[in-house]
Length: 325
Image (cartoon, rainbow, N blue to C red; front, side, top):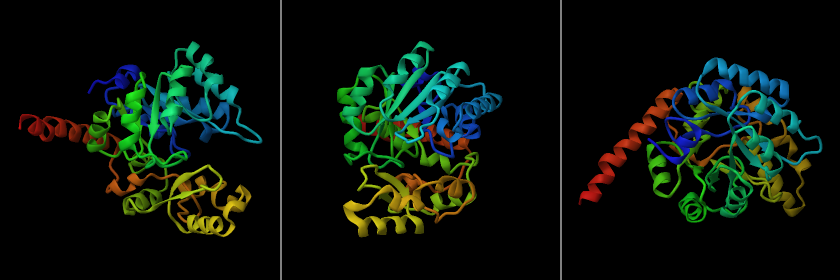
C-alpha cells in the first residue's frame, strides 16, 4: 500500500509504532521495521545519550530497515540531556524522529539540517496546524481514545481525523483506537495517511514487557481504562488496577487541592515495576481503549500481515460491493 507516509518514511506499510516508555526498546522497533512498518525507540526510556547510542546500535544489528527515535519534551526540575540526545540521534544516522510533549521548534533546525523527518504527536487540530507551521514533516493526530496523554479537549477520532484532513497540508497518522485492518481502512477513509499503533504492539511476542502485561491487555475490555491527573490538566489514559483506583480516590477526596505529590506513589517510577517486573497493581501505566480489540498475542510480523490482509479484503470485497450496488 502506497501513501504519503510510506513514501516519506521509506516503508512498505503505512503502520508506525509509537514511542512507548519501557516498551520502545531495540527489540520492539526492529520487529516492526522488519515487518514493513516503522519501529520507534523511546529516547527517554534510555535516559542518557550513551545509552541511547547503544540502543540505536543494537537496533541496527537487528534490522537494516528504517526506524526512528521518539523524543518527548517535558518540563522538569532536572530535565534530560536533550542536546546530548539530539546529537546522538544525528550522529547515529537516524532518519525519523517522533516528537511529543512540548513544542519541538527549538530542536527542528538541528534535526532538519541533518535530513531527519520529524513527526510531532498532537491531540488537537490547532496543535497540528502549529506543528505544520513550524516545519514538522508530518503529525500523529491522537484522538481521545488513545493511551497516554489525550490532551484536554476530549475529541474522538471520528471527528478529529476528518477535521485534521480539512485543515492540514502535511501527511498525518491516525493514533488512538488503531488495532487492525478495520482501523487502517477507517483512518484512510477519514483522511489519514497511515496509522500509529501503541497499545496493540505491546501485546505481541517481541514486546519486551512482562507476560502479565500482555495478559492484562488480552483480558481487558474497552471499559477498563481510566483517566487520571485530570485535575492537574495532565490527563493520562491508563489501564485500571488497584493502584489506579487508589489514585482516583485521592483525586476525588482532595478535589481541586490535589497536587502531584499526593499521587506520586501511584505514578512516579511505576513503569519498570509494571512493565519489567509485572506488578500489575503498582499504579498508572498508559493504555488505550483499544485494549477491547486485543484478543491475542501474535508476533509483530503476524500482526502487521493480518492488518494489511484485512485492509485489502475490506477495500477489495466489502467496500467494493457497496460501490457496485
